[in-house]
Length: 49
Image (tube, one colour):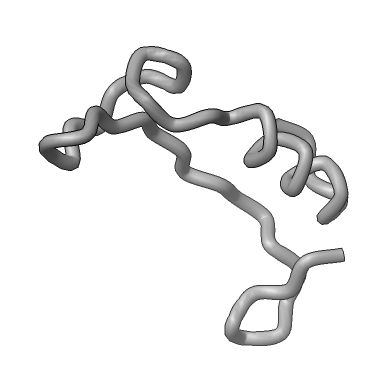
């Protein structure tokens, strides 16, 4: 299980997508980030994306 800086289990993920020129806070899948590996890491940490 993934632990936060405080040592407690991570309870919340705030995810957003971006384009290559700015931090645009797009909906997941609307920018350039490949979220497949991100979601796999969340699942492996015990989270539910």
